[in-house]
Length: 115
Image (cartoon, rainbow, N blue to C red; front, side, top):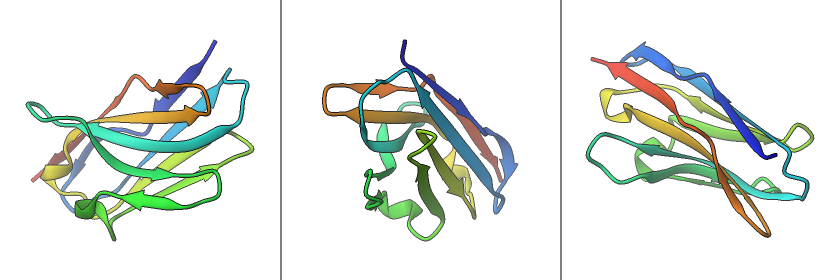
């Protein structure tokens, strides 16, 4: 059974930092891309950052220079270090994992940034 376990969300003041983690288990095949999406109330889900198995990264323009995505291939875990957070970063953050066959989503973790 595939499980994506997310952790690290919470409430933080503007300018603060949070680190999200997502551990994947039960997948059974090689994981290609791992990434983070977010969805704010009344808005569409958007890609925040993703990373390939080779380490190539892609970021949403508004988080470049503030967020850093990384992964541990041995542990099938992806991280999102979020610095200099601002209220516009408030959203539910979802982990996404892609294999050659399927795409899996985490349950989401709330990130709230107060001004």
